[in-house]
Length: 108
Length: 115
Image (cartoon, rainbow over all chains, first blue to last red; front, side, top):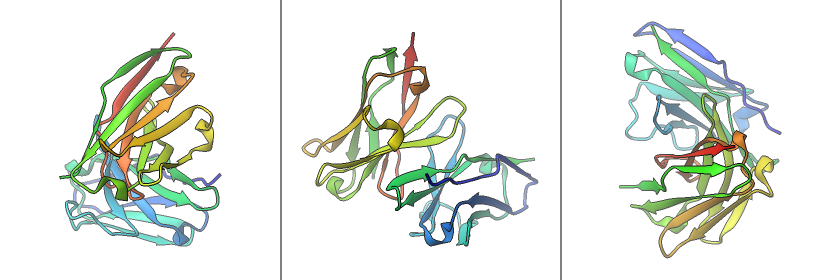
């Protein structure tokens, strides 16, 4: 089965740029979706490699995908960006949708 | 506006079945998949399966095949997820979500499985 690997945690100071990675075999050939989940809330789509950023998401959020790594980039991080972030793809070989294990972003 | 409204919390005994509903509004219901995703306490997101409302075609995660059934009632724009023979490992918040992008999510339904 297809596996997505995310680092468990990333810590940054306010104003820095967060680069959250998601590793998967040839993920550069897949559509990748990223979700933000704050404590006690449902996940929210923040970026899709197919459709870019939803209109309600700030322009500081972007994404890139190449080779075996997808990256969610959050510029000028602020306290409100503290959350868990998950990547997700559809694996056409198995016809399964797969989530990564998630990365907890902490803003110091 | 797009809304997915789920049914309320459930408490089930070991071995029982649970059914959760997800009522959609604010968009053309037949045109988007509905996915089911769950999150066990302190854990990550896990995809359970999806349904295409126009055809009723389903795809289930391999882990849940044989225990999960997802159906749709297009007359009420509602999707139902049925999970049988629950164990303590099925204690989780269950979410429905729209489309291949998962662009909108329900509020979640807590399912607690007790001995």
